[in-house]
Length: 586
Ligand SMILES: Nc1ncnc2c1ncn2[C@@H]1O[C@H](COP(=O)(O)OP(=O)(O)OP(=O)(O)O)[C@@H](O)[C@H]1O
Image 1 (cartoon, rainbow, N blue to C red):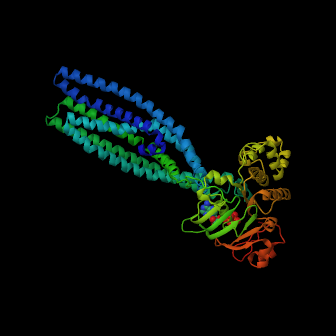
Image 2: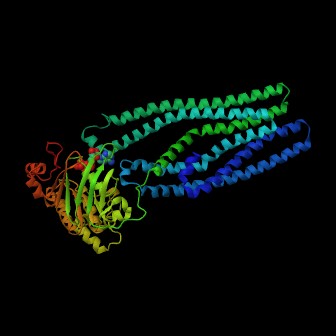
Image 3: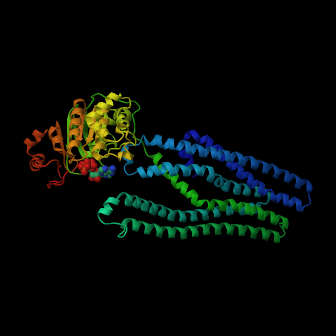
């Protein structure tokens, strides 16, 4: 844990941390030394040598004063380190998170939040409360052992043999408990996920009559597993603690027996024996304390491992010198291979070119990789082979800032901040004038939303935009994109089944965006596909099946043409995998 804490603190706080460790060790060593002085004091008393007795008492007084000073300094330093942990760890984690590929966050938002809050608190309190007993638990027995070599080498040897035995027993007990604690942690995480699911899915569960009478089986099962695992953990923890306690007691008993044997053989006086018993007690007590802190130590170690896991995740490599954009508004895929799972390629040898200020529609069966293409353009992930060029330059040769400056993203899962409509649009370009915001809002149809809301433009949109409908949220997101004036707009049409109002605004926005920007759209609406300059039809093997304009593809008489003829009678469509047309509303 000492090493883990050092790693997560970062290089700039190493000196502070080392100073704390030194003072805590000095405190532990002085404690052990002070206790060991009982032996020479007892011996000189037994010998009736008052001068030596007072001399040793003087040394004890100095050691005790030293202990007090070391205690104070190490406590202040421990709080200093704890404050540094709390102050800097959030910043370190935050600074690191912004360098990670966006794709890394998929499915991790819950655990990242947990680590950033609970993990840093645990690390901070470990520095303030746990490190001192741990360091003393190691330093004091070591100091007692070394001191005993000066006063009675036989006891010194006995302590030297005993220490590793106690450490071994503690390690066995700890690994025993850690295994069951790990299972408890997993079971607890599973049932809390099921509880969240249960709360979130209430409308669905109620709609299907899965109320509390019938219960929600996954949650019930998860709780049952958690209870079983918790029972087992309790038993195993008690056994582990008992093993630890037994080992310490056995060592203590061994030391008492050894001292008694020496006393009986006339090698030690009665007063020597009493002094050694005191020393032996002080030897085992810190070791016992380390065992008692075992649970808390393992918990902190787990949190530090999770923090370290985030900090060890490699950021997207950035070039030391950014390449300048050479062909603004173009997007190229050059023999790209990509898969989310190593060894399972999704896109294979994919090449495509999107000229500036054109509109490209991506169509294909569900799961064919349309969203993945958009994510690669935005560099959520790096390709496995080939090159993705944005603005004529490999995305890996651009800084994240230069790269993202060329893109505006309108995704299905639009995230709005719990702020006013106006501030949510302003996010697209913070230095935009009020008139520019008004214009973007008007084009995307947000003005009409504001007119309807009770506080107009000043209405807060709620957590993640919960006060707006899906179509309205997308209109705000489109307004952001219009305001940004990025040369390339990536847009995932929310759904084929937009209501006429949202449909009209989206159509108008696309036309506006098209005047200045390159548009790459995951197209669900017939009108988008027909109006595109280029249609890329993906097959379900991660390759491009057909490409061209609507007229070209109809003339080719291939798969697109077949589906077109079949589906053009309904609004909204999507190519389905294999030979079976997709018959849903999308
Ligand atoms: N983060 C991820 N990790 C692992 N696999 C993923 C991830 N995201 C997508 N996939 C898988 O990659 C494949 C392609 O997904 P993608 O979202 O690109 O398809 P799509 O053509 O956009 O589908 P749809 O039209 O249904 O939205 C799917 O099989 C999907 O399950």
